[in-house]
Amino acid sequence: MAPAPAVQSAGAPPQRPVLAAFPAMVPRQSAPPTEEDAPLGVQVDQLIATHDPDDAYTAYWLIANCEIFNRDHDRMIYDLEEVTQKRNMIPYRGMNDGEKQHDTKLCAGMNERMRVSRFDYLAIAVKAGVSGAAIQMAAEGPFGDHSALKTRPDDPLVKEWKANVLEQLSKEADSGDLSTLNYLWVQTLTGDELIAKDPALAYRYAVAQGFIYGEINGPEALEATMYAPEGQLMKTVVDLSAEQRSAERAAAQRIADNARERHRHAENAARPAAG
Image (cartoon, rainbow, N blue to C red; front, top):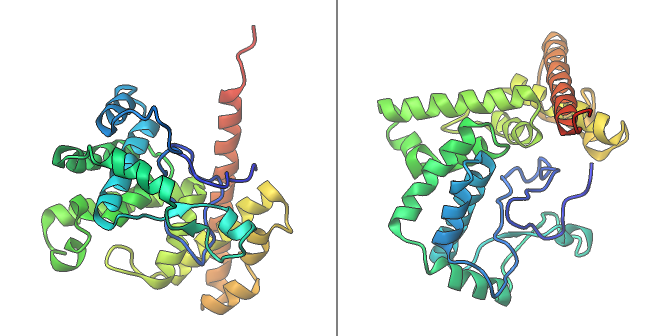
């Protein structure tokens, strides 16, 4: 697997999700500043016009990043050099002056219609199974109001939203999507208003990551050893019986098998048709 780029650009999320100590979803960052940047509305319209769910997700992030910047006058930038060169624990940093100037100009064009429409673009990506989209919908909360999970848990609309998001997250985890597995293993370990605490599922999702990374990068890879079924981490943070561990390990292997099959199909689809 190729390493993630040092600084994240639009439409290219890192191929390796951040490890368990920092499970937040990595946003699709705005592209590096250029003098030829089209206005925000034009960029969004061009992305949506392709009818590609991946582009809809990029459009969502363009608007979401601008909302964060307009509110805070800063936002976190995914930059792998924070880890590889500066030895920080997490690959994020604040914006530099050039990035702030870029977003000041770009995000001045955001209006209320765009702000609200981002949820429609996110829903398109979630429905299509775009990696990371369901995680971001979970982070946004029902219709952009995460507090509704706590203040209106019995609201039929909130309950429907919650059921749909949980179903999509479970589906993507079972398919072997690494970002979703990474997110769910931490969330099921701790629990919150959206995702119930479930140590057995946490073990399953963590071990599945280890199996998948072991196939991709070899059995000595960091993730493969960290999430080993009988490794120190799994023994320390998850209290399960031997029978439970055996059952969840088998479920984790099925997830890894699904990931392998999905990868095989993707490779076959990418091969040019025989002439």
